[in-house]
Length: 547
Image (cartoon, rainbow, N blue to C red):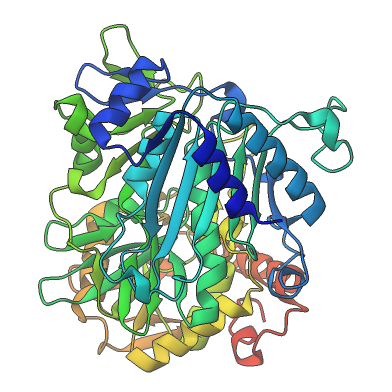
């Protein structure tokens, strides 16, 4: 079946296709269609059904075929297989639904700021709001796109956010719900045929994350490392990457008045350097504070003409006055805002840079046993990259009374579908080739675990980040931690030396020792469970805490 020809014929026969219309027109259509409303300040505001306030991991499926059977890690709980026949059924249903709509929106963009590997992406959607979201998040088609490694065939996505799958046709093929019914939502990707389908998920992030995952699957074949990270550049052109899971401070720490921002979420590291995948940002709004996140605040709440504002606010409480309550989470704690990078003041244009001089792995260690900063060798960096450690805090969920150790490979497990060695090896090779320094930064607790000690002071963490990106930490003396196999500096500008050793900050040293051993054991067990049969380099395995 020629999927692209079929969609081309659909668009050719349809009487009302809005083909790559501009931002102002999309805003007008979104309001006229009653998809969205305007805030008092001019942002576009939308709300989704309760089942679409976030990602639906169990409905996110990848087509398993002869090629992906070998290169996708089907042992991962994040890689749920879908057979090709069912994908074709879903695609046919989607095309039929699209053919009956009174209007369709087409958006042609690319994923990636570097034309050498930008992925041409066409999205056909039923909704103007989601089309505007794609315009916010995906790059305009650049000059030189014909030289892209993906110029032979781009990616095609069908986006039907509010139409549900006819679930009775897919019993035994799609997810079974707790009530025994079949799910009527699917986010499906066919990597081989470069096709995507968002069917029944109104969450804008489904569009973004599908394409992020596609890039993460496609790039390693071309020697390009995709990284879930923020990136910025110093005045001397030095690039830094910051990796971290939610709550570790990735967005906050990458916003530095002395460094230009490339992007806050997704980048590629090629033979030419670093490039942002995206054209914008997709930030959380819950409990946002102007003094802590002034850039996000201004991009969201600045007053501007609706046609030029740029922000799409999703699932945030808004009063009849058109003003927001970012602390209200009754609909969802996952309220979001999408805006183009041009809404920010201190950005790098275009969002590309050289090879990263410094990489920071951020871990909010609620156990308080990791030092504020440690230097990692290439093997250690590959290990911590594989593990993607942070902590889920006590008190955030009913029944959680102790910090819960959390591992998410490559700091973005749901979006890294390939076998894990594909990413880890690329990191090691690129570190060696370009002399990149990698540091582990604990943005969590000190002096005792969550509930006893205190959260790392943001000014201390900023001093550490400055020491790392400036190169000040490259030549100081280090002691090796025998349990975690990391190198702890004896000094860091702006930080008291005694604070650099986590054990020094605990009153009860024996309690520290026990807590450290417990975390190391959790590392070892998680590694054996997730990577024990994956053929990971023994030199990397030896760096795992607890081994």
